[in-house]
Length: 209
View 1 (tube, rainbow, N blue to C red):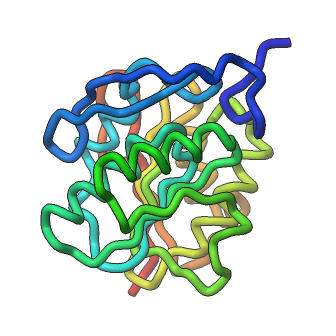
View 2: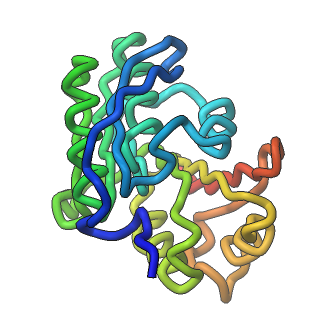
């Protein structure tokens, strides 16, 4: 059976490859490798997401399923440019993805970025923003559990932006997020579709202030 990018310890070649990509409004050089999501470029869904999200807000920002780090790096670069006090938490189960995110952040001088597993995020941390190209291919049950775990950790007034391919169930995910018997986020939360582009939907989840 083929290996998935959400494998904890990928067995595929760890040989690093250098790529030039556009993040934070500039061209930067990053390292990627096999065994992580979209190792050769910034994928289309992530580009759609990054073209839709607002500027980073002061506080803690979560990149849920960070891969080699494009979303987290983009957020940290933007925050550094604006001198906004933001801690970016780049979360993944894939150890190789976390190592790549750490090395890319270090190469770009981004001290406010932390690449972590779920257990390494203190329980008291609440996020002003969550940005994610979630790993849809983990399956609906795992995806739903992931969102039930992390969306309630939005701070009051916080928002999450999720990008999902239309053909992979973006509309049904929005229905689930919005239904009382779906995600079960409670009356303080609302969800809507805010963008459609290149076969992807960007869904926004807000927590009332």
